[in-house]
Image 1 (cartoon, rainbow, N blue to C red):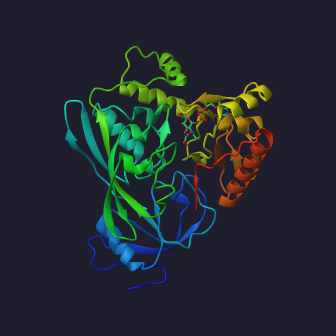
Image 2 (cartoon, rainbow, N blue to C red):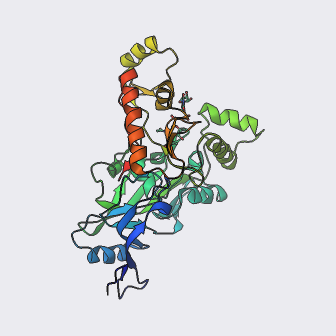
Image 3 (spheres, rainbow, N blue to C red):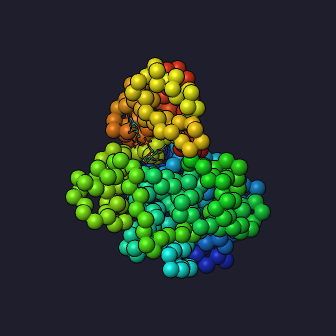
Length: 351
Ligand code: EPU
């Protein structure tokens, strides 16, 4: 059964629909206007399998919350939106509870569930946009915590072998905004659910200076995961643009890692340069500082811009195309390289 606009896959309980020429504007946090030639969504592995069987030979793009992508043009590859839901406590002992979450659930919704149930570990990751499925892919992190710290395991469906595979923490090769799903297995798997190991007796992480300051400002006398979450929300809202109001995908670039000797040479030339020593002896540079020093902070070209409060974040003021944002990012990369001989890497996935 096929019409010009959509195909209904018969015999499936939810009667999934394969649609054609669908606007992705509401489905990416940059708010970029671009079309998917073929589009569908799934809520279970079975539905995903059925859709894939209708698209033989295709190499689909699995779409989550759309909060870490830059779409640079219309997409010919089928776009399949992951809407697997559910949040259940699957096991627990005296100290920990394991919560299994569907890949299509909203990340901050899960953080709220943990706070309401007194489960510690993800409060520092409050208000990160996007869905659960993307969290291990990026090894999302903020304010001293990364998802690898609370990760138990995940189940993913291999799109070409058509089978479920379990990944434990060591299988994921988590790094700074990295995992096997971002490079080695890029586009091979659709993550179906992720299980997190959370503390029933929370251990607070307020090592990040800004959190302590914010807790003081809010007059917090007794630490709790809710107080930390509220502080993080307040910090994020004060400097990161709300994607519902101004299109963006959070940090567009990664903070680059350089050797201690390269850092000391830069420090001689640029006294204010910001870097954090790492355990491996290298130094992580604050890319926001490098970009700001090149004069880009608050810069706007048409509807593409560099955010006025956080230079790491590129923004779409309304009608920017993916190519406009990409072009701006290229110019930023080149100017940072010219001034500091440091090549930035994009954190956002280009489609
Ligand atoms: N800085 C500037 N100018 C700027 C921005 C930053 O000089 O415009 C310097 C300042 O010295 C500041 C330092 O950079 O003290 C660090 O800035 P910030 O605390 O805002 O953190 P970041 O390194 O810029 C990273 C993550 C954020 C995360 C924050 C807090 C990356 C790529 N980004 O940003 O993650 O929220 O730390 O932990 O690692 C994201 O991934 O989308 C994201 C927002």
